[in-house]
Image 1 (cartoon, rainbow, N blue to C red):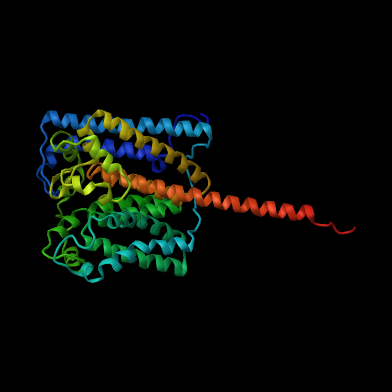
Image 2: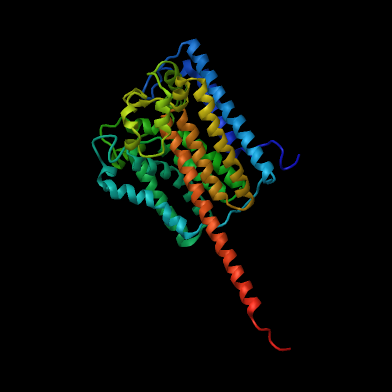
Length: 420
């Protein structure tokens, strides 16, 4: 098959396939385990869907996955036919070292968080939520924090000496900060770090490390649930909980329910929640801050209870099949575009950038199953901004190189050759 054949990238660098697969897994596993996980705890809401609603929910999620995959494949194929790049397969690589500026940038979300609220709330506080929780700046920093763990894994794997030491110190700072939140992101740290190591080099040890990271992440999933039930919060009380945690008797069913509660949340959002209209979708997709967009005027209506927002897929299903096809069709087009960007980036050796795109896409897919459309869609907005900046810098660098070559050529034309 030629390079223009209708085929996606390998799974681990395919935004279209990963998004569609995650939707499908949430639908299939959630449907099969809905009775076994009902009432197991680990979630901020208890929902039992009747058989008809459960079947409708499975259909909604399945159509959502299909729309993303079909439009994504069509877009990626059209772009690759216009500018062909061979499909990377059985990749083996050792990626270049990250620029020191990248290491410095990884510290910015950590510095911002500490500068905003100080050290004390991270160590010990009375309430679970604190600081700027829910603000625009906080949501941006939270998303970046997750992706920074991947970058630090990459840097630790590729750097040496002082650079590696500094990267490990920054990583430790994030482990403490994310752990102090009592968030599920704490459990994700091992697999995110292992993903960064894998992006630095597709070796046997890196692949085993990725599997080990996934196992450790699963084992850590019950911890955030214990953290949230603590009378006090922060690094100090959470450390005590961690030291006394019984790994063999941990409530892993509740941990699974914490993930696959997505299925009934989507069903309740689509078929049992408050009505959602196209006006609400327009506000959710508006890229400007929530206050100016008017999101906080409708945000309480887009919740199932005080702690549980509607799921993005469910919001679209609530509006109707036209919203599902149009909005997720647009998502598929964007992911198809990034499928092509990743394919070219891997060929050109930009593996860290490919990894960042995949990180954004995985978070988007997961958040569409448990969080509001607005929160999930912003990840794709951030991704487009990053890509536009990258393209702008690449264009500037290209024009500078062209100007330099033209200048040298001009000097050569006007120079006087030496005599024999």
